[in-house]
Image (tube, rainbow, N blue to C red):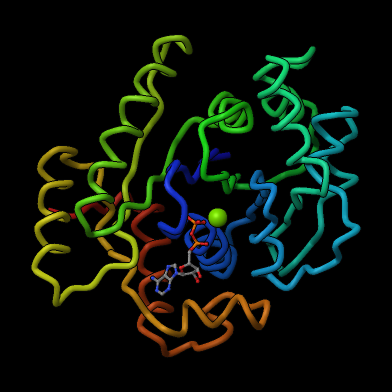
Length: 255
Ligand SMILES: Nc1ncnc2c1ncn2[C@@H]1O[C@H](COP(=O)(O)OP(=O)(O)O)[C@@H](O)[C@H]1O
Ligand SMILES: [Mg+2]
């Protein structure tokens, strides 16, 4: 199983959009995918049409060591989702106020080791922060996938994130495999192309080939509880995600 976390401490860069749509594209190509929503805002579940607010999920797995199987929802063929659950936010606050508060950064990793769920990909959506939830995410995965927007602040945020990841890797004792994706990409913008070229030159062989373009259908689809491929098969971003899934499978990078 490839275990991937979609991370970026900056909000609004397209993490949740990337997580849900890439997972759908992979599932559609026959891969079994397990999604975990580690963002207390629960947008991933909503964007795939799971709107039950009373639903518990990964919060129970982390707090009460309940089995993951109990909370996995089959949202599409080949696609299982473990929702965030309403106590996930509390957990993060409690830990930030009182230090680790009796629970460690490896709870998610341990829960995955106990899990019987069979899949080819694990993809985790993360919150826009770098607190205890993100530490749990990073311990649980082997790869990070970083969406980068084509603007100056996107590039600044990226250099901050890379620093945080380096520190984490030092305490982990090994490196995480890393891929980047251009997100909300506007090809006509010179700045966006410049940022892409900078990312490519700073991280050779790590930027996936397909940029995810800025596209109205992609912003509209979550309102219908659908991936963009289900919502508008012919939209540019549907093509982008089908292609990005192949990039990930075939390790195609931008050059
Ligand atoms: N490529 C894109 N084209 C158009 N809208 C996008 C695109 N990527 C993300 N969005 C929209 O931008 C907002 C933030 O995206 P989101 O995936 O929630 O970011 P994050 O999870 O990093 O906070 C959402 O309303 C989403 O629909
Ligand atoms: Mg999000």
